[in-house]
Length: 415
Image (cartoon, rainbow, N blue to C red; front, side, top):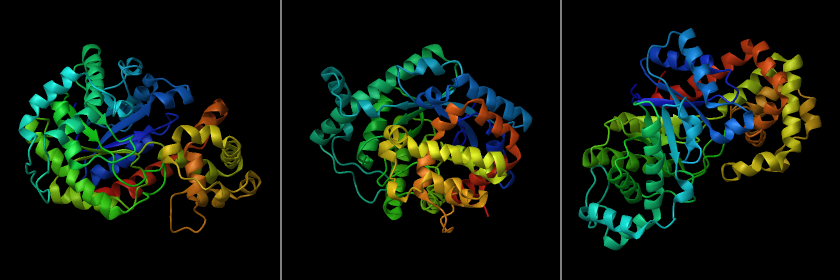
């Protein structure tokens, strides 16, 4: 039960694609790259789908048995907090502690004083290997960072202790500070890790905020070179913190909404190869979109279901997009009318949705809308689930190819 150097968070909205996903990791292993599968699903997604955390474990266990997977695997309670974590205790062994809502909240003054005492040696400039210059820091700056992040780390500690008191003895903890408005500087990341060490949080992954936009299901929006600088600096901070605070040697960065960020993968691969660092990448809803592509490829009834999901998503745009407003960038004028989509062939539908930027029919606005349109499929109930079984032969190859060829190969340099 040890998270590997490389791990992949795999969302499976409807619990039908675990084998297809695992096949992608088997192909990676056959080509010399071992990746730990982590099936993840959030409280919000469970509520929308009507599923339970136990469903995720059952689907994973079934795939592991069917494909004779003998390495470790994990079930991630994704983006949980003290209020929602009880739902996941029995079924999960990976917990992503989301503390974004607590960032900036005031911490108790006694806690602030105690942490500042713990961190006193870092209140003047100090070097971190592989950073271009010493971190310029003084007592006031450390206090400002403490006041910004300490309440968040303390909330993570409360959730961790609940898990520790109620869960199986071996589990993985990730700290998520990515769902904020501004990226953390290397200095802020260092002190977040220092606060975690002070609270004895046994972090294995940490998800910082990077600059640019990590929109759902589409490529990165921003300057990839700037991201590369931030990512490499954060890798250096994590490596330093491992030695400074006795974190697990497996501590590594986690990139959230990491699916389909194709312009970033060459940079991440170069930095991983250069530094020897590990990586956790969350791919979330990209698998659900491959289900739609598979249904469209099946033509006939499958295409009609895919078209109906688009029509209903178009009609319920506001409801679907609102919860994801910060990670969507949809130009509604570039969304085709449902009548147009209903006239498409299976090839046209698949080409518009499949993330192939070289295809002139590819439509990132349609793709983002359908990414959040899984609620419509959930409302179809057995009609949609039965179609997943009926057309599994069309869907599974798309799921495997998407994860392996578009994600794993460029991330890890597999030819």
